[in-house]
Length: 106
Image (tube, rainbow, N blue to C red; front, side):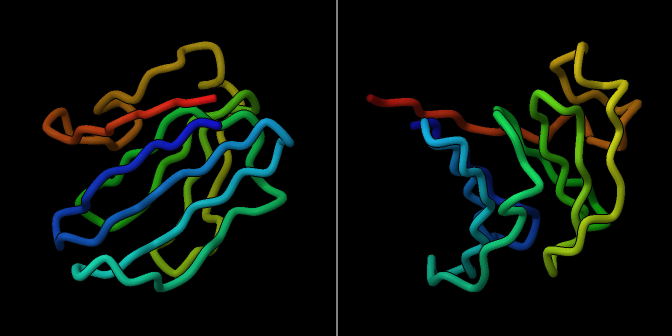
């Protein structure tokens, strides 16, 4: 199982879960760590990275490319051409100072 998490500029936590069973989802938690909502299930595949921008858009990197979600969980766009780059850059709207933390265990 792979878990990637980050904190946005407002202190909310985003957790990207990628399981061995292929089920991927994003959990949004408030500034106190309480679960708010889950989204992306069925849309994400082999996801390995997550980032946010100053417009509160959520970028998820996976084997099918980069998918962009709103903070409410709505899919805004999908960019298959980024799949080979395997990196988020300012070219994709992600500021350089954003960091994501990854933890994998079996």
